[in-house]
Length: 494
Image (cartoon, rainbow, N blue to C red; front, side, top):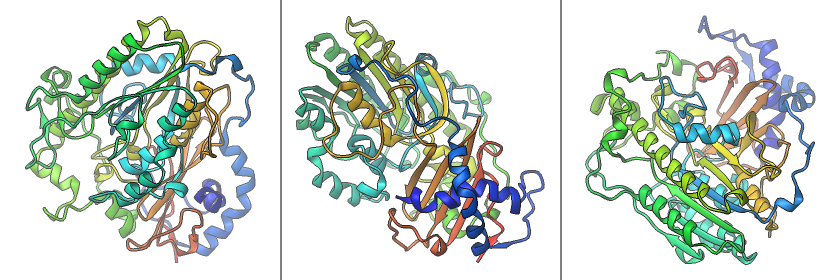
């Protein structure tokens, strides 16, 4: 896909910038421009050597997991809009109350550099529930009906995760938001559908204490508890719960707001000239203009709500989600088959809280693409507890689930199972609308991100990208510039 087309440029760019461009973090002054042709040509020669170096870890299994430990159970929790703010990930500018996620991270094979394929719900859920990258499902846009996702899901209903495992005699149980629009409730052995919390439809960013007693996340936890207590454990099961918070509306109990007194809120800061090294497409992606209010999302939040209030509400919703995770973990740990069950927790996309003057998601920055991923398994199952800096993608989720359950892939999936003492090559792509980025790892660091943008009206094929036709380029050294403030390719011109 795109990785093949831009690997030479994206990976080689790290060294190329060391030769041709100087990091501007302190001076924030633009370097003399260089030609796009010269830059692209110069990186190609460096690609082969850097492609292997960038991985930072081997791509083979050193100690294969115990093959008898397949046919285990899987309990998977997908959290909506959870970015890298949980304490164990360190992405927040202040202390965050996520004790259950932090405890689970310590017990798990925890991927600190996990990125989603699409930083918005339809495409991301397509990858998670079908095991396919953008090149296959093509769902990169978020519009009123998410038509790409609707078409893809209707045509490929028979190959969803729950359909595949059920044909292998695995008991499939689901609850909450797992897909984007159609939950396919009849395709599960048991399913509990939920609706978002009641919200005030006149408020763009709705938050506060609940408007009624409806709590979809508590309903998911209660359903999973009930299913765990009554399930026939004589055959493997896949149990999945979709937690809606911290997706808007941030309507949660006062006890979660109490963790974050408003006077103690710290919001992330961005240099005033952060957008000066960006082109119009990249700017529009961050701005996400609201046509009704003729304002960007950042201005809406500042004018209507206040940054501290929004941060408080988002963190309160995150702590609510953390409590739900704790309730579900306690339920599985109380069962006699707990040692035969692998627990996976991850999020479908992140969420900006003012970083880079952006709110919400739909950007190719860490705040949108980098999310938690934790896999906890019994000894010998191939998930030794460890904090992993290696770059991994959400395409590995479904192959990992099938591997744990002992279910063969019916058709080729886009990723590989993460079970065992190994890691995939440290390159992955993430897409949104008319833009795509290549995220690559580095030895002992977070690596970098190379992004290509095309004119806003252009459609492009993720399988074959003409880099010379790209309207804008971005490159960030995420190891030294984790906030992605400084576009190292601002000096690359036509």
